[in-house]
Image (cartoon, one colour):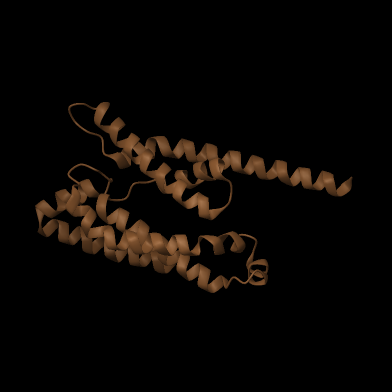
Length: 196
C-alpha cells in the first residue's frame, strides 16, 4: 500500500510539473481529471478500442471460473479452477477495461462500483450474466449522468464525474447497507435451520 502511495505521489508531481510547463495541456488535464464526455468523439474510441476488446474477451473468458472461485480457493481448486490464473486474468481484464475507459473520458467515480451491485440485484451472482448487465447498466448510468450534467447547469455543463460523485456515493452506501442486511438475514436463516 505504501508503494502505491509513493508511486501516486511521484507521478502526481510529474503530471503537475508537466502541466505548469504547458498551460493548454494543464487545462485539458484539469477537465479530464474530473471525468467528462464533452469533446469525446469517435477517434477517442478507436484509440482505446483494442484495449477494450482484449479486456472484454479476457473478462468473458474468466467469468465461469469466477463463479467457482467465489466459493473460495479450496472449493475452486476442487472444481478445477487455478486461483492464481483466475486472479491474474481477472486483474488483467480489469486493468485493460478500466484503464481504457479512464484514458478516454477521465476518472468517473462510482459507476464502476454501483453498476455491478445493481446488476447483481437483477441477475444474481453468476458472472457470465453479471458482467454484460454491469456493462450495460454502467453505460446507462454514465449517459444519464451526462444528460443531468448538461441540463441542470444550462448553458454551462457539469462534468459527468461530478454528477456521479454526488449521486453515486449515497446510492453506493445504500447498496452496501442492503447487501449487508441480506447477508445477515441469510446467516440468521442458516443458523435457525441448523438448530432446528
